View 1 (cartoon, rainbow, N blue to C red):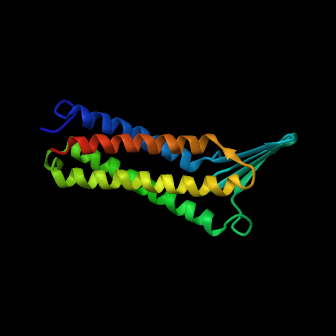
View 2: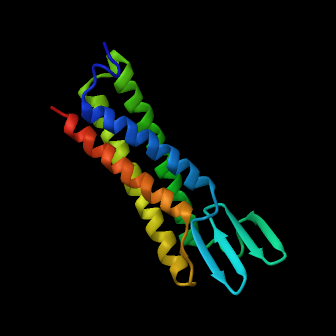
View 3: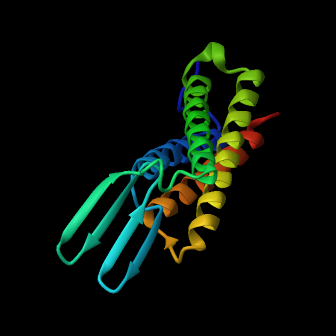
Length: 168
C-alpha cells in the first residue's frame, strides 16, 4: 500500500518541498521581476520573456525584443530555465508516482527522481547566475521573481537531500 501514511518523514518533506518549489518556480518563470532598475522616477523590470517600463505617466510592458536584448547569454538563460522547469515538473511527477503508486515504489524510480531533482537545481542555478551577472553590468538589482526562483532552487535541493536520505 502506497500513500501518505506509509511513507517516511524524509519523503513527506521531499514531496512538500518539491511541490512548493515547483509552484514558486512556475510563478518566477512567468513574471517580469527578475532584474529591476530604478532611477529618477523610472522603473524597469526585466523577466525571462517580458519587460515592464514605468514612468510618472504610466507603464508599458511587452515581449523582450529579440533584436535589442536577445544576446546569446539571454537565450542561454531562457534555455537553462526551460530545462530547469522541465526537470522539476518531471521530478515532481515521478515523486508523486513513487509516493502514491505501489508498483512505482522501487529504487530505480527513486534514483530517477533524485537525478531530475538535482538536474533541475543545477539548471535553475546556472540560469540565475547567467542572468544576474549580465544584468549587474547595467546597474540592475535582483528582483522578486529571481528571489522566487532562488527559493524554488533551495526547496528543490532540500527535496533532493530528503530523497537521497530515503535510499536504503
